[in-house]
Amino acid sequence: MLELFTDRLQLKIVDTSNLSKIHELLSVPEVDLYNALGIPTNKEVTDVYLQEWIDDFEMRKEFVFAIYIQSSKEFIGLISLKIGNPKYSIGSIWYKLHPIFWSKGYATESAKRILKFSFEEIGLHRVEAGCAIANIGSVRVLEKIGMIREGHKRKVLPLKTGWSDNYEFAMLEEDWSN
Image (cartoon, rainbow, N blue to C red; front, side, top):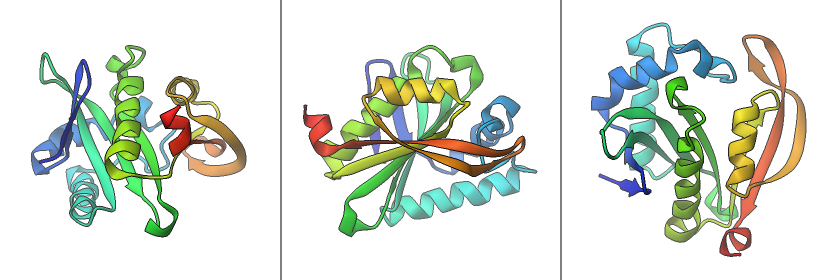
């Protein structure tokens, strides 16, 4: 079982025991606001996502971690590193935290740990992330962890509210080393 730690958090690869908490998280309207995935219609739909993440981990294509507060063992969200074509040595990250844990530095702390994992343990050359331009909280997280905003894609995210523009962020291995 792969686990990563920060000062306050424990990140553990998801498994079937996480189904209820993940379904609850993905069903929160605020979490879904900037999410192209949509709210799962039932737990079986969430289980399909979970099984895909477990299979992708076994093939080392994606590392989806459940985020826990170390002191209380409370589940607060998910964070992922998806590995692209090995030739390019690129990964991409995404995260979702329950709104009661927003604005407490947990997303920043876990995303910074995923960057460390990406560059120092996996050995990637580049890590990317994107977010809807209206998702100010996510923009701030990506800026705080040192990612560089490289682009602005127009109307690329199919959200419930309509097509959204997306900011593209990235960090290179040498950025991390510095």
